[in-house]
Image 1 (tube, rainbow, N blue to C red):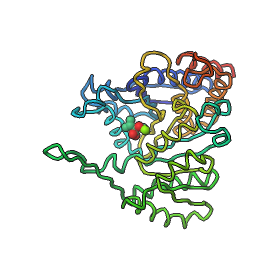
Image 2 (cartoon, rainbow, N blue to C red):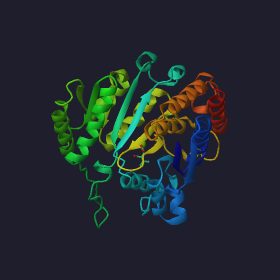
Image 3 (cartoon, rainbow, N blue to C red):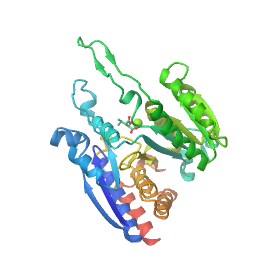
Image 4 (cartoon, rainbow, N blue to C red):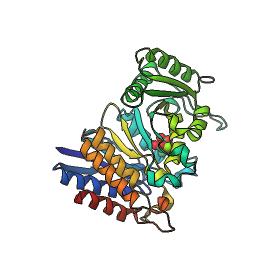
Length: 356
Ligand code: IPM
Ligand code: MG
């Protein structure tokens, strides 16, 4: 099979972790006789500096012409402390999501047996936790208009907007996921306060009639935040709006022991994007210490979702598991004071795959 992918490394540790994910993708392609071709595209702060746009048209054209996009991370502290910055790196990520129509972000949350002790939560609570968060990705307060400041600069506003169409298509994905898993769907909203949430809940209740085999639970987001920590094993599939999903998945990453472990897939109308859930971790940039596993597992999701090559995806996951069991890991999840380098972990996983 021809695997034609776009590589967007982005900022901070992006280039280092992408390099390892690409290494693994190449090894898998060789092993299973696929032809891998890839092109790099500019995005984020790096793209602002070079062409003044965090998601240049040229990058968009590249993504549209590819079968999948492997994405590193975006963000640069230089912009965070400058509220007057007109263009921000994160806008690149948001316009990519919007222009590619990536309305669903799938974030699986699992634990690794040998890392259970790394979670700050009690072992009996996290052992066996396994759920998927389906986050709406192109609507809500991230994109609603108007957004901005009053002329005198003393009032600022964001608007949360959702249409029936947007809500129904993401809920449908949630119901379908639940059907293939343990048949429980948790709809997270803030229906006691927000009008958009009440529309979500209404549509979910209507749709639930078509899914009698699925147990549907409605949770207010504040309560959900508590339950994720208190009883993570209670969840199977969670579906929620854009910002709630952003916040809850960072929280949920604590269960697995490190943010550096969790991959995601963003799917929708055009080319799908595969990216770790963590950010650009600028403090670690260039040091060869960042955990490449979240990005390598994102490559596994790429094989599964974009190419429907499950055997390839499973082998990547198996190799990652093996590296964790062997404790050949970066500092964030290592037992001792020392960790392996980003590239050595990538090499270890690559050679496991080769020798399999
Ligand atoms: C994420 C990130 C992004 C988001 C930022 C970088 C804009 O936190 O993918 O979770 O909020 O969606
Ligand atoms: Mg986030």
